[in-house]
Each structure stands twice: as structure tokens, then as C-alpha cells.
Amino acid sequence: MDRQSTLGFVLIAIIIIGWMVWNTYHDTPVNNTNKPQQQTQTQKQEQQKLPEPQFKQEPRAVETPEKKVTIETDKYKAIISSKGMAIIYWELKGMQAWYGAPTNLIKEKSREFTMMFTTQSGQKVDTRYVDFEFNNLQNSKVSVKGENSFTLTATLNAGNGAQVIRTLTFHGNSYHVDADFQFVNMDNILPNTQRFVDIGWNKGLQYQEMSSSDESNAAKAFASMNGTLEETDAAKYNEPVNAHQSGIIDFIGTKTKYFIAAIINKNANKDAEYFADGVRYGAPENGAVETYSVSYRVRYNGGTQKNSYQLYLGPLDYDIVKTYGMESTVDLGWKWLVRPIGEWIMMPAFKIIHSLIPNFGIAIIVFSILMKLLLTPLSRGQMQSSLKMKALQPEIEKLRKQYADDPTGMQQAQMKLYGEYGINPMGGCLPLLLQMPILYALYNVLTTNIHLRHAMFIPGWIPDLSVPDHILHLPFSLMGLTAISGMALVMGITMFIQQRMTITDPNQKAMIYMMPVMMTFMFSNLPSGLNLYYLTFNFLGIAQQVWMTKFSKKQISLDELKKMPKKEGWLQKRLRMAQEMAEQQGRPMPNNPYLK
Image 1 (cartoon, rainbow, N blue to C red):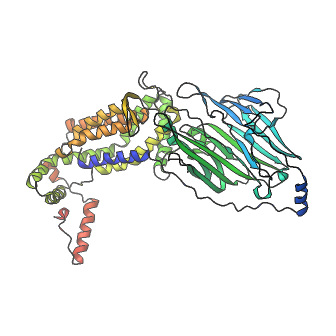
Image 2 (tube, one colour):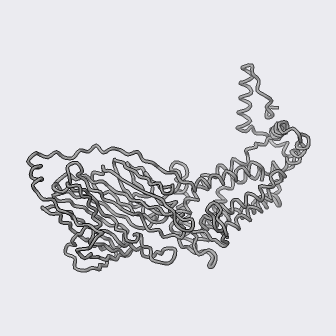
Image 3 (cartoon, rainbow, N blue to C red):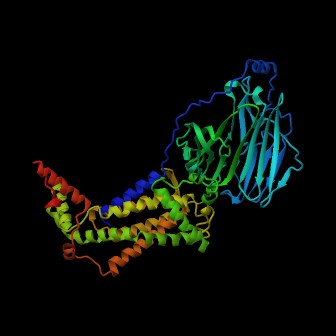
């Protein structure tokens, strides 16, 4: 491997580190300009005469026993409480947490998908602790299967004819719930200056993966504003973040690495306000936890008003969330460059391969082979450049001896030598740079694919392709790394072999040892499925290198290199044009070794 190829690998390392660094998005608050409806003086006087109810809220002595309804569908098991008609349990069927427990997305003691408002007297009402009455409920356990559905209705009687009526419609074969919030005669409850209700999600989602840091890196709050996904990320410890925006809102929610809670706006008028809050704090064993709350602010216009939503609470599966128009919540990289590669090429290809090969590990190996074939033109150009540099190595050694005490002279002589033999010094680096969008897209496809979660490859070694296969635990922490991955270690060994085969420059021999060690540490916290891809890619690269150096008849000698047609590269062309322009202006440039 020549110096330019080594530079390319360094760039890969830098970019991979960049993938793991998270940017915090700060949304600019937008003041709401909607004005409450004006009321006549008579109406105001009538309102002042009506007594305002005092809402009894927990936590304090519970006066009314809490009622619970269990809903079981083909996809999940849910428990709904009469307190706020809140969701207090949501277990996804066919899925488990990393330690084997059922996948319950609701945090302990959390009550989700509720509403808050402020009364005329200034009482802040959090309906998580307010009693609703279930309407005509005959059974506390309901089973909903297949195409069937079940509607659960509950009412909050606020006094003086004011009511909040909530309905939740559950479907047997879907992860979503249809939800209506109907407000009746709330004019006497809500103040003129704050005639709104906040409907939202309160405490994020329960983590399900072994690494809380990995979950936190992916966790965010989000809102689709005018078709563009806006994310809020609490990237720094103990520094709360928030967002407040107004506009056309399609959906809001929060997510972790593999699961999502989204409230989809089904109202004809989607103009609304959005609020989000989040915070990140430390957890045991170098872990981290992020908690987010998101809400719609609903403007109440008087009389009877119904607002409709869909709650999606389930896996962050690209194919499923796409049916709800939420595919943008799956992080596949930069929108205009990387995402299209992953979304329209890699994901369909991987899906086809897996439909033919059920084992995800073998499917990744086959996928690696196909990607290697696809990238062969780029890697071939890189290897050809490496062979040319290898053929030129004896001449470079002569220059080193000749200019041992003159680094500047050595550099000029070396550039002149490159020009004489038609070698582009960037020829080995450019193919690597062209591969970066593809590698980045692949990284996102494999790390966000929920189907790799708990997918076994090698029993006893790799039971889960979505997490690192740690085989050696360190007695210390190195930049957050506490264990070495077996797959990353083997990949580092293959990188060492590959570099021993290609690096001939004595000044670069340190890279033979440094790069594999660095990459082994860097990749030890990545999913074993991703490391399996890179390991396979390295094996194929070694095979290609062996074929080109041992068996190919296209070995390049120095004489053959000199006789090759010399195509003027971009760098040489620019230098020549600059030289000609300088000479026309009577200001010759310093010696340009390319033009001699």
C-alpha cells in the first residue's frame, strides 16, 4: 500500500469517527400568532358566575380505584388505565429485551399518550392523574385478532357540562391505534389567554438493548414539519434541550435505536405547535440514558371540537414505518448523497439476498461479495496505482540517498519522477474517497436494520449480529472502550496481512502495525454484523491482491511503466495552466517539477 492509500485509510478512520459524533439541533422558537376567539361581555359575565371544578390529581391519596383494561392483539399486549386513559404497558409480541424479558416500551411508572391544560384559576391539570370513566365497558380483558378492531371510550366530566371524551381504536393486525380527543363545552374551563390543550408523550421509551450508550446515540425527539424531519438530540450530559415550532405538522414522536413512538396528525388542518424536551444523563458502566417528551398544542375554538391522531408504537422497521409516511425517521445518512444509495440500492439488494438465504450472517457475506464486485473498478484502479508505485520504488530509493540532507530537493525530485513516469500521486487515494459514500450508506443500512437484532450467526460466538461480539474484557477503559470484539480482532489481523503485502516504503512500515491496532479498537464497539461485512471485504481484498501480485501477467516493470502513455491528470493540468498564466503575466512560477 502506497502513501496515498494509507492516507485514504486514515480518512476512512476519521470519517467513521465522525459518524459516531452527534450534532445537536437547536430549533428556533416560533411565536404563535393565533389569537383566541373574542367573546361578548355577556358571555364573560356568565362564565364568571359558573363555579370552576377542582381536578383531583395524583400522586396523593387515591380516592377512586384505578381501573385497567388489557388489550391483546396479534402485534402487542397493552394495558390502559382509567387515570388519564393513559397507556401504562405496551409489550410487543415476538420480541425480547436483550436480557430475555418481554419488550415493554413503556417505562416503569410512566403513563403515556395523555394531555395537559391550565384552567381559568391557573390550576395545571395533568390528566395522567385524573379519573376518566370507561363507557359501557363489559370486560377488563379484550382480544382483537386479524382484521377486527375494538374501540375503547372514556369520559372526563369537568362539571358544568364540560367534558373530554377520549376514544382509542385498536386493530388486530397493526401496531397503530386510532385516537380521538373530543372537547365539549370547555369554554368555562380554559382561560381566554390559554385556550389550548397539550397532547403528547411524556418520558420517552424504555431501553431494550444491552448498551445504553448505543441506545442513547440513536435516541431523539422529532417532528415532521412541512415534510421535513426536524430532530432534537440531547447530545451533552445534563444539558437539557428543547424545541418549539409552529407550522404544518405531519407527525411527532421519539425513538430509540430500534423502536419508535409517533403521534400522526390526522386532522384536516395540520397547522399546530410542537414542543419537545430532552436530557441526557449518565448510567452505570459508562452508560447513558436520554429521555424525551413531545407534544402537540391543540387550539380549542369553543363548543364541541374533535382532534384525531394515530399513535404508532412499535418497531422502527423501514418497510412498516414507510406505510405511515415516516420512513425519514430511519437514519440512513445524508439526504442528498448517502441516503439514496442505502435506500434505493443496498436495502432492496440485501432484502432479495435474505429472501434466498435465511441466515443473516451468510446473507451479509454474500452481500459483501456482491459489493466487492461492484467496487472492483475502483479497487482495481487503486491496486494498479499501487503496482506502479511499487515498480518506481527503486528509483525513489535512489533519490532518498541522493537527497538525504535536502528534504525540499527530495520532494521536488520525487514529483519530477512522478511526472516523468506518468504517475498521479493521488491515484491510490481517489478510489478510496469515491467509495466513502457507499461505505457510509452500508454502515447506516446494517446498523439500523432491526432484522439483524438478535439474529444468530455462529452459536457460542456471535449470538446477535446487532451487537459487538466481545471476547476480551479490558481491566481499564480506553476512550469508553472496555472490551475487544472477536470479529474486529480478526478484521485487524486481515488488515495487517493486507498492508504487509502492499506497503514497501520503509518510512511507512509503522503504519503496518499502527493502523490495524487502531481499527481493531475503533471497530470493537460496532455491531458484529457490520464487522462481518468488513472482514469479508478484507479477505476478498487479500485474494485480489494475491492474484494481481502472484499470478497476474500484468506485472509492471520500470521500462514498461516508462513506455506507458502518459495521461495528464487533473493536478498536472492545473499546475500547467497556472504556469502558462503566470508566464503570460511576466511572473514565472517557482520550479514546477511536473512541467520539466
